[in-house]
Amino acid sequence: MLLQMSQITKTYGKTTANSAVDFTLREGEIHALVGENGAGKTTLMRMLYGMEQPTSGSIRLRGQTVTFASPVDAIAAGIGMVHQHFMLFPSFTVAENIVIGREPKAGPSFDRKKAVQQVEQLCADYRMPINPLMKVADCPLGLQQRVEILKVLYQGADIIILDEPTGVLTPLEARDLLVTMKSLAALGKSFIIITHKLHEVMEVADRVTVLRDGRIRGTLDTSATNAEELSRLMVGRELADSVKQASDPGEVVLEVRDATLYGGKGRTSKAKAREEKPVLNGVSLQVRAGEVVGIAGISGNGQSELIQAIAGLQPLDGGEIRLQGTSIAGRSPLAVRGLGLAHIPEDRYQWGAAKDGTVLENGIMGHHRSSARFGLLAGRKLRTMVAGWISQFQIKAGSQEQKAKVLSGGNLQKLIVARELEGSEPFLIAAEPTRGVDIGAMELIHEELLRKRSERGAILLVSSELTEILKLSDRIVVMYEGRIAGELAAEDATEETISLLMAGGELRV
Ligand SMILES: Nc1ncnc2c1ncn2[C@@H]1O[C@H](COP(=O)(O)OP(=O)(O)OP(=O)(O)O)[C@@H](O)[C@H]1O
Image (cartoon, protein in one colour):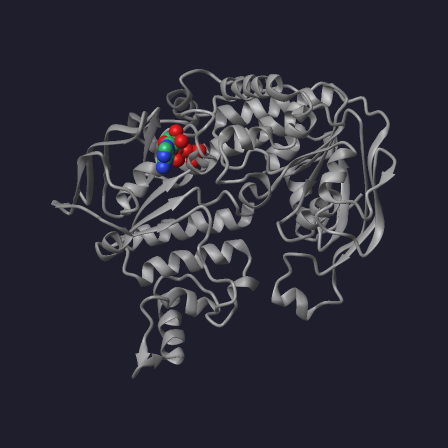
């Protein structure tokens, strides 16, 4: 056996993140690790990568007992990890990012030419083409991930841990990654992949281990199981699919007219070079009370900028946005919220949460202003409200005083969703609302979004998951290169028609 983790237990104060976990990995194997949010998947992998030390238990690598005081030790032993949030330097080139820390030298200085040659060789060896001279800032997320994988290969890893690797990828990029993993496994590399997507597990993994509440619920050959069995083991119950009632849209709540934006906040150096090409190019759309409008598109086609403009985070260069009839021009994000906006943001770490704040503080952000007037009593009320979400969304948190940054990724997402769904704002932006959450929580979030719709809420849903767009939307708008490439009624839309528009194709009528 290549790797054997035995009886691993990890506790943080009163929280037991892993309890007597046995986990093995074979050479050339792709092993999926699945389980609900907070089940302990990331914790187990952080211990394998030397970021945390087990409270008890042992790790054997190729038959030898090992202890890793830090990732440096794990890397030296041939273990690499690609995190959910990429850790690259955007202004450096691909080659520089890959060799960083182990740069080839010509005398005392960095040998750039050799670095490029080495990276070219690496790409050829592993059949993962990428231009070593490209700036990382100009690489789409799929390529950035490839850089991360090449980097761990450059460091000599033969065990590669991927934490929710397809969460931020487009469907095509995700497919590419699965193919890459299979071909690297055929070359003898071994993978551990944490994922919530059971179809990926069935497609790519040889074996799958299910964790629940920090304990192992089973390790199975994927050829001898199926997604239903896995989901039962993970959640401990059958999941019902939420059903959407017919829509009956009312008055216009959000009106975007001819929205145009050049550059944009997160613009890359490439976008700067093409400054004349707008990131939003005459976008017009409406969302009415009691309907869900879904925006589909490959990331980077203007969806993020559109959301930021609507939320008051990015002023437009042309056109107009009205919320309940009032123009948002010149208003701060807070003032836009005051006009009736709730917002589940795309990037929970950048916009959605204060990581150093407590669970309670993060839960009441936005609600505290309305309750400040009521003093202490309100404090108790807010606490009860947050306690209600913790139980409804099964948010795993030690207490409301726990810092938000120690929540697992999916649990923080659930807290933000619960907070934004709590109020009676007439308009909701739901950007990637189920990113990183487990299948049970995904069902619950879908139900809650549909409940808001049935209570006459207007919802703008932006999601890279086409199944989510198709399941929840009444109308689907596809964005391509900053424009609306097409609009489809839910009953006319299929994955094929949407994908065609997403890729810049045209529908034949
Ligand atoms: N530093 C810490 N202090 C306290 N509790 C922690 C710490 N790190 C993790 N935890 C807790 O350990 C549990 C397991 O978290 P972990 O991140 O491993 O879950 P996960 O299975 O990866 O979840 P997700 O699918 O949401 O990413 C959670 O309840 C989490 O809050």
